[in-house]
Length: 185
Image (cartoon, rainbow, N blue to C red; front, side, top):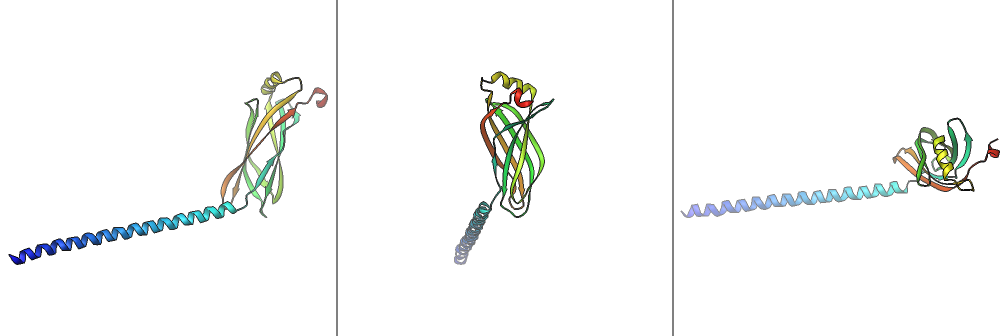
C-alpha cells in the first residue's frame, strides 16, 4: 500500500510539472507575439514617418472669370497652378469641380485623364460650363452691381508611384463681375 500512495503524489507532481510547462509555453508565445506586434508597430511608424516626409505636388487655384458664351450656356474658367517637386512628370487621373453661388450648386463635373503634370510648374485651365437655366436663375438673384459671389471647389487626383492615388483639394471664393452686352460684342 505504501508504494501505491507514493505513486499517486508522483503522478500529481508530474501533472503539475506538465501544467507549468504548458503555462511557460503560453507565456513565451505571448511574449513573442507581443514582441512581433511591437516590431510591426515600430515598422509601421517608421514607414508612415518616411512617407509623410516625401515631397508631394502642391496646387493653387486662381479666381474665376468669364470666358465665353455659346448656344449651350456660359463658359467660365479658372487656372490651376500645380507645382511638381519631382524630375519626372506625374499623371493626373481626374480633375473634379463644383461651382456654387449663394449656397446652390450651379455646375459640377469631372475631367477624366486631363493629362500630365510636368516637372516644375504646370498651368491647367479649368473650364466650367454653366447651362442657361442656371444663368437665368443667377440673373434673378443679381443686385444692381452685376456681381456674383461664388465658391469653386476643385479636386486634382494624381497617381504617385510610392504613395498611390491621392487627391489635392482646392477651394477659392470671390466675386465675379458679369459681362455686359458691350463686353460681349
